[in-house]
Image (cartoon, rainbow, N blue to C red; front, side, top):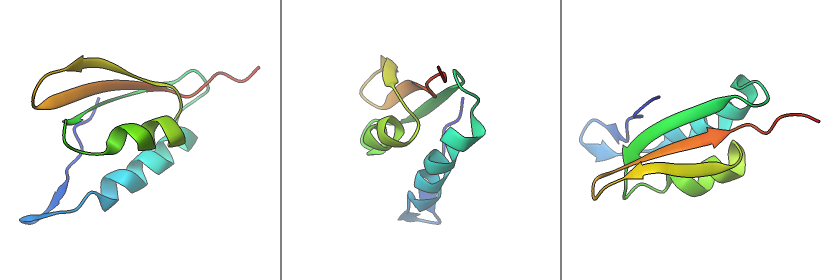
Length: 75
């Protein structure tokens, strides 16, 4: 599980996190899971679904979201 940064100094910058999400699929074995916690206002959920695989929200409150993304098993 990771809570990736979205600041570079005082400025908001999620580019490193988006690059990390893009690389996650290659790092996961088929059936492997990526758990991520992030501030609920950040737009990571579509990127996780598109780039890693099926993604579910495991917990959420007003501030944070906890997601579980899975690289689909190969047939």
